Image 1 (cartoon, rainbow, N blue to C red):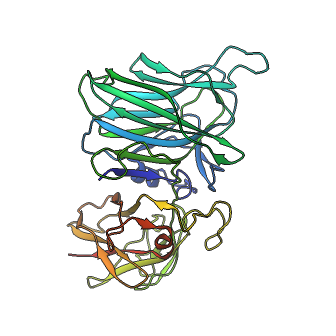
Image 2 (cartoon, rainbow, N blue to C red):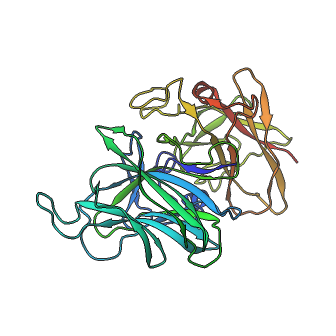
Length: 380
């Protein structure tokens, strides 16, 4: 498995009415403030002092991550900006890649109008680009980092966004054979995205994370990756659902208990081991209302590098239950995922990454994402 995590950074979290919902997805989302227009998407998360984290994974030496950023104002004022990527091990930051504003004025520009990207191990600067990035335009960054105290390495790439179109990636910073592990131990188990800025706000959009432990999605991609967050927008094939507010426009089962309806995923109370199918998702790539492809639709020829199935579940009372993810294609062929044990009354987020279509064992097609039906099964 190499695709480990992805977030649309806004489209599923546009309400931001419940910090607990954000924490379930990000492992902890610190002080995220709101949303604004994204890069070819409806929403991007915006803040001036925040951080979002992936789940804690098995330690690996090499990680690859990318996202699009838009600083909304000139980067002037006090404080130390930390907007960028962090690679962490057991809660300790190993390596950072952060923007650094130009504080001096150039002819024809203002202080803070341009910024560089700086790679640091603690307070030690390992490399910095020139001041070649503009503070009020989208830029897409992606970085591959090997976290090691003796044979560490990193490569930072950037792609400009011109007239709404993402350009080609160019390597703007690279080093090898350096110490990239601030705690002197190789490896990282978590990647974080930071919004902290010294003036105005920054927007992040389309965040994804790979490791290098597989045969696909294990290196810097040659093209920009658009991450689309989708939620169900209709009743299911097995059970009726009703609109439920919270994390995006979610649904809950009609026979949910009458309390705690603020949770974005309802509790299934069937008396047998029934399936819950949710269907007619928002079409990936669209930026308009569900069912209306406008803005930047994904073409039928687009590559889909993987899907992440995420659900929030908890026990109603003490004990435990096993749930399974279900995928059903347009031909009514179904595939079940591994058992997931739910053993606490505290709602938790659960992820399953599917880089290939589990029915065909081939790469996902864009059309399959339009036809997809997903569900949860109470297995035992």
